[in-house]
Length: 88
Image (cartoon, rainbow, N blue to C red; front, top):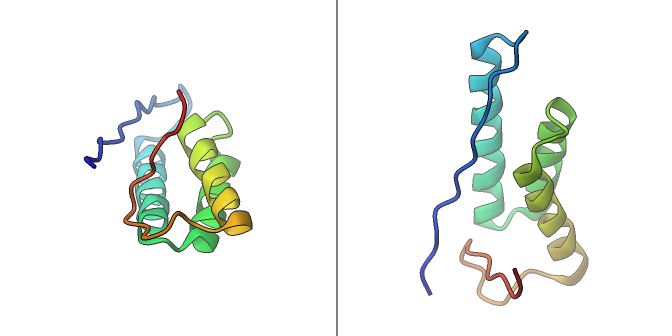
């Protein structure tokens, strides 16, 4: 099993200060680290915070939904931070 990198294009909004975007990126990276480590409750809250700031962030939305699923039904056995997609 080999992990793929996760990249997301982030666009600076017209009226946005560049430091706000950088802070947002750092917040998303911190949320993703929680997700990778298996702390799905904290990750879900962190992604929710991201989505309050940028509701259009589809990556944060998908990862938040995965956290909710793992919290409801349990994480995959031997979670190693890599999600295996079962469908496209």
